[in-house]
Length: 365
Ligand code: SAH
Image (cartoon, rainbow, N blue to C red; front, top):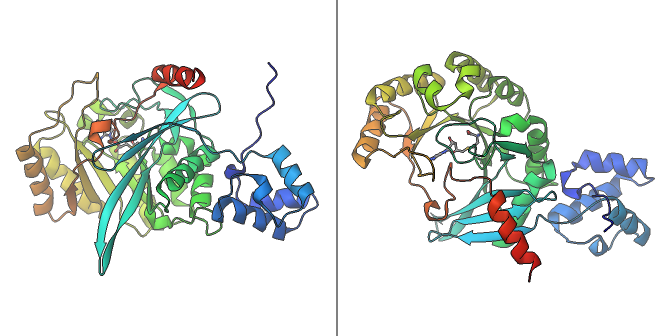
């Protein structure tokens, strides 16, 4: 069977890219703006709907770019309204995105605010010992349009805009830095997905040089560090990346970050029984957080099939939190959502084997 070559996606391009394309194809900048408006503001699903463009231009666009959405292979609902999307990428790989709705009360009413947890890679190379995503290793980086596509699909399913976006799905976003930066630009742009920079958080296991590069990008995005250990000794045991960038190197990068960004850094700290939940770790963590004026987000460890780790008792969790608070650190103990559908932090994993089943069942309809 002859397969036609895959067209580049319309959702991987910035307005500047469209302007350049228009210029090279005898079109005006105004046309480029119209195209972008159809794509991102009106969210049309076919070139034909772009009624203020000439037939010839629409045909040329259709031959040159794809406007396809990422196909959703499975949408799992959780009892707490968390939803997990499983998307199939053009090469058959699968990627997960988690949508978390928080019911927010405000004067005169309430509304659902959507936080979307997006993936940046298929698999992950960093091999953190507690995380499901690294279990099967690294497959590939996501393309810009595959990052944007997760957000588009979630907004279309919800019928409303995403309020907060966190790069805490599968993968290490800073290992896919060039695409990440372009995706952030499209996500943030008023002509694009229009999500405020302060509402986007990039989470990293601690790639120091890339933190320094991202610090220079003129966008007030937030940074979360998956710290999980307050000393090199503890961190080395559970996060191999710490051997490459030990804490002094990581904190040097955080200083650079702070020179360029206004928002407080967040330290994420999974509590794992007997590994990093000792109160002596809490004392050191408190000092580190204070030195960086960072907030601490404690996450009781989520069970991952095939891994032996356990979450500490609630008494221990609270005691750990109390040490931080007593030291004057802004800290929270996160109560996870989506645990029942394996959509909570660290539970997103490669889905290739199950994919075979899903795809064959779709084909066999
Ligand atoms: N690679 C990036 C982005 C993934 S974020 C990073 O490490 O930050 C995923 C978040 O979930 C990280 O804070 C990660 O440390 C956390 N996490 C991983 N496994 C977990 C588990 N089993 N329970 C709770 N949180 C986990």
